[in-house]
Length: 359
Image 1 (spheres, rainbow, N blue to C red):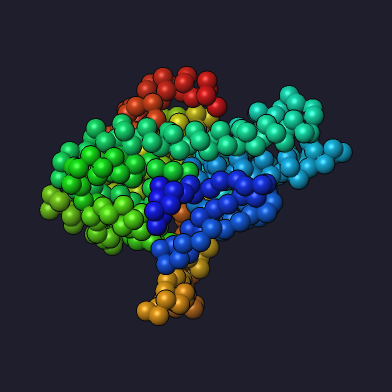
Image 2: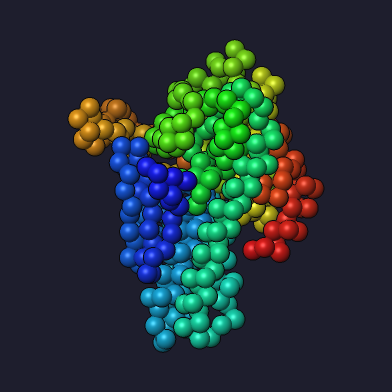
């Protein structure tokens, strides 16, 4: 997508360095962050300079390519294996991260020549990133069919192009609908505690000049009951074999509210997010993040200076799970790059025959 008229991806590789849009600084500052080696790339994933399922998947694949470039002839197999562990240990919930690392490992597993490994790792990392961008573009085309003129759409967290390599998942159908002149309006959940809705989704929609309003996470039910929301579309970080979907904390309650108010609830995700080895949502590992994300809010003062302000008493503790799981029964459908499917084992199995072929 374009920023100030120039086309960007969220993550790419240049001369062995991984380049990322620094998402920790948005919306106040647009800056490119450079990772010189795989350890810096892993750290950027961990501290969420890059975040979002597809974006960290591509960053992980590029990090693996960096590891291959850093390795020397004596210990390259072990070095690459250790790098894979380091990258996989950054964040536990999003499937795309593991898909990205494994995609590179599988591409080089039968090759003994280090130069060849390096060449193929870079090619395959680019292929993985391209796949993500193209998959998200297709998700937008399929998802657009669900959006009618004047629809008012609720989304949670940020599943826009910043969360992927380009286009995004939940926002991709909205971009398509807007470009088709459907006059859509988007309700943006702020998405505490890291506020990816108010900082990232709102920034993306403003860049595209799509009418929107940020609402408190607690306000969605109010607007649903008033009949002001036509459809809910969210992303996903991991989808289990039975259709249960892990996504940013707070997604589950939006799905329950949508069902209660007879509003369709769709999950948008590429096939790289499906984890067929996980039977159901109870088996998806849920990342617990630092109490500081709850204790402090980050932003800019009116003079544009970045600041961190404490909102919690010093003696209080917080709990901060980063994700929750929406059971398949609340999901109207899953929008993938292969088409829109029902959130059940049968349709996911049909889809998966395709997945194995690709990755």
